[in-house]
Image 1 (cartoon, helix red, strand yellow):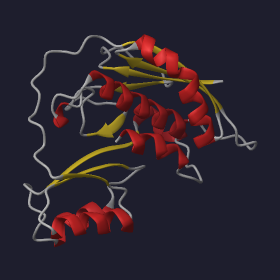
Image 2 (cartoon, one colour; image 1 turned 90 degrees about the vertical axis):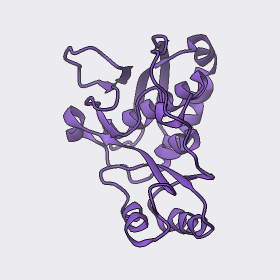
Image 3 (cartoon, helix red, strand yellow; image 1 turned 120 degrees about the vertical axis):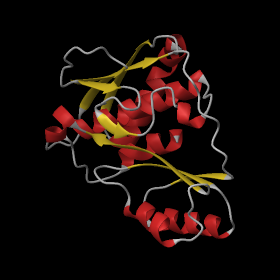
Image 4 (cartoon, helix red, strand yellow; image 1 turned 30 degrees about the horizontal axis):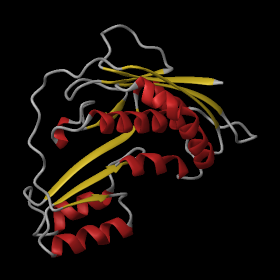
Length: 215
């Protein structure tokens, strides 16, 4: 069984290659993102929602850094810090079964206590009319263009494997309606640094389903 762990705002000590660090904005994390662990860019996000996004992030990172054997099926153990440990432990088997369906792997989930949230300045809630999941494909691009044509203010939520979705550049560069007041973009990306050499290039994208749901 291959072990992976996500930690929030760790100290300056050396982290093992089985550990992913999610630090604040401006500090280097184990993956590219413009979101901090408290999701302050979205306003005062409830703790339960932060837990869900943290869990989805850990699942994505674990899936993308463990190579598949020829037999395809992997045995993955994931440790995630959450605020409500008892609540998540009660649902661990349910989520493990769900992930098994999505990825065809065996999952063992454990949860550790996440420190109490820091008293940090929270950004104002984005003033948008619609939140869209934005994959960078034609379907999500057409949906964004349609909303912009109706003068809606959009927040596009996405994640990608290696590069920013090119369609976001198309939106920013070619539509007169895509002013900063109308279009916002929040995203996660792939694991980096020590994990880059072992990133698994999966033949499917079933592993992103949970992250998309949490978005």
